[in-house]
Length: 639
Image (cartoon, rainbow, N blue to C red):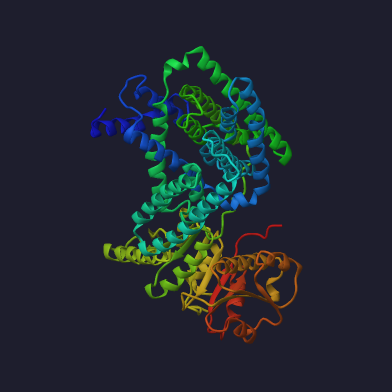
């Protein structure tokens, strides 16, 4: 098809029809898209050719797939499971390389093609990851280790590709290694230093307009791929690295991430799979030689990955379902495998006839990966979800005059954890259209302020029976990790600690809560006051949260001081998470705090979630002109 309209109409039809048909046939979507590409390709119906715009879109889809892989990784969980990730990453790379290379040589391949093909089976694609997300076990230790291992093994496999291609082209001399290291250093500087800084600046200027943000992410992706090619490595390495570097700028539940995923999962990545299917000649799939090669490749790809998962599972102490989950996540061959083979064909290292056996490998490994995931995911224990504190910060807004400092604090906390802010307004069921419109505009203005700091935000207006219920329901609805409330600075009744509404929310909230009395939107320092009364079992959860809040603000450059009345072993353990904080031991009273706060300081005071605790915490700040954050943690102290 040469006509633009008919060509894109057909591609859209393929993208629309292939996934549901694949599900009805009980095969993964990726298999359906590959087969659909084969069907409309030159070897069957002859409707679409892999050239021109179709080839360009396919390459763009491959880059976008690696970009999404980096963008969606949970970096916090990756750091927590780094030992398991290193063990599994090294094992799932070395076992296929060590086993497959001599087998490829014995099968008649030259040394360089043998090493390149072995690196194909060393890499993998997290095809079955959505299955584990669906069962709610995506944060289990086995899954987290597999995700971290993907970073290691795919990067090593792609570096093997670079070295093999350079050796084939005759450029593997003494200057190659320093040139490669310098090129990688330049690529890292581009992807992890320059682009994130430009992104933060642009996101600040763009405010609520998310279109420039999405366009900049595309610019970052394709420019990183171009820079990678320029310094002598494959573009997919640049795409993956820039995805990692933009990870914290695009929160997982944000509207921006939704747009990124729609563009990728709905268009570019499926087009990449369809474009690969266009390369397949079904006639070759019934050829005995092709089937023999495909059987050898499949046995190596699956056998070595299953062996690596079992070995790594024994080392890290994984149970049966856990090592099967690791095998499921590491056995599917798709993105990096196809990339390496296509590069090898392009430079003349591999014969084009090997594409069909490799596609067979992809089809079989994708099916096996899906079956293993369906069998292991329901048997994994549900992990305790521990989301970062600033991942989703809910800020109820009622007064436009006090909204600025509130959202500034929320934005500072969210920025440190790569999260987003949700400004919410609440109106009663009998509110007229004018009042609802005013509430919506107030929430949108708060959203604009947050996004003006470069942090993602998503405004919400709720209709509920009363403000307290609306706030509490919003906490559940958006999956908030932190609630930030404004406070007038005095009680409204004799029985209320902070006022009727605030008391009702604080004592019933299911997430950590900050009750704030703020006049400024910028602070010079943070002082955490820890009275002796809060060092008991009931107060320590609030102390821990207060230190976490101070730590998040400290990441933004604010100096942190902890004032405590006495040394305490448990407090010392909690303080280990704040290595740069100063500790002041002595009376914690207004005079001491005023001296520590100085001008423009922010006082953080822990409190248990009860009326007496709130009254005790707020009295500590009486007579001080400093801004106040009262911290209430509803969670028990772990360990």
